[in-house]
Length: 89
Image (cartoon, rainbow, N blue to C red; front, top):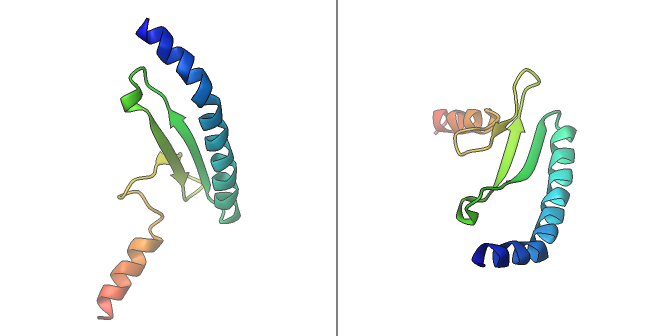
C-alpha cells in the first residue's frame, strides 16, 4: 500500500522535476559548448528516494570522457590562478 502511494505521489511531482532538470541541462550544456567544453545535468534515480541526486558531468578537454563535477574535478584554470596568486603574495 505504501509503495503504491509513493508511486502515485511521484506521478505528481516527477514530471515537473524532470522538466526543470531538462531545462537546466539544455542551458548548462549550451554554456559549456560556448567555451568548447561539454557538460550535462541529470537526475540520478535510485529505488530509495533518499539516495536520489542531481549529477553534474563535465569535460574540459576533447580527449576526456564526461566526469562527475566535484570539488577536486575542475578545468585546472582555477587551481592555476590560485597557485599563481600564492606565488605573488
